[in-house]
Length: 153
Length: 153
Image 1 (cartoon, rainbow over the protein chains, first blue to last red):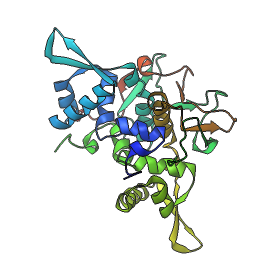
Image 2: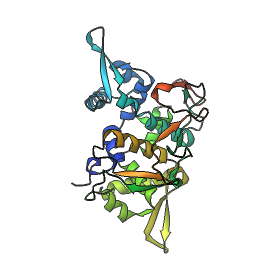
Image 3: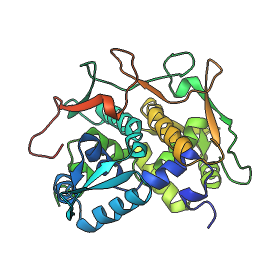
Image 4: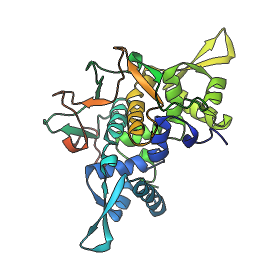
């Protein structure tokens, strides 16, 4: 049915969610941002079912968000690592974490990302042109070159 | 089962996903970032099922991410608007859009967010202390005040 799936929407937000919006996918990416990991490490740290982890990792490898590195030429010891495309998911993780810290962490942030400068990163989004802070109130959407009028924005 | 659900994870990313990680929720937020909308407008623009839209909007209202505004004292004409907590989801939407534009928009971005300065916003994340760009390579995670050792980070 047209429009019943993210994939039918001409929208980069929908397309990103099509790739990484499934339950658990972004928590797998979170783990791999912290450290390359073996299958059993992910299974243990995330506490999810084996089948879901296999399904999500297979899709992430297909989409070239994750790649596998063989350890000591033993296929059972594959280590999963983020590709550059996967590392570029960091701003999504960071934005989710900033919102969760603000609205769903009554005891304070469970974890903090520190920048290489030695201070907490926070999540500060600035305009690439004027360097001023960007928020919902200071933006509006305009049609871009990839817009297809036959489908909803 | 412990660990089988986002809610059991002491992690702001998991908690944010618990609130807005369900399928379609962030596309509803996208619509409401662009403009306050009535139920029938959301139904038409998103092309999702009535039941899913009701379920997602009910949860968003319960979580105070969305509130309803009566139009002309007629309850059937409720307009859904983002609260401040909802507007603060903008960086998540912006980060998803930036990644989708880069990796899943072969014809170019379908839509562009323009800043109030008149230029495209892009998605530029900077450290709140040193103002330098932040990426996966320039951060590491440390334990925060809300960390509970009995549960996985």
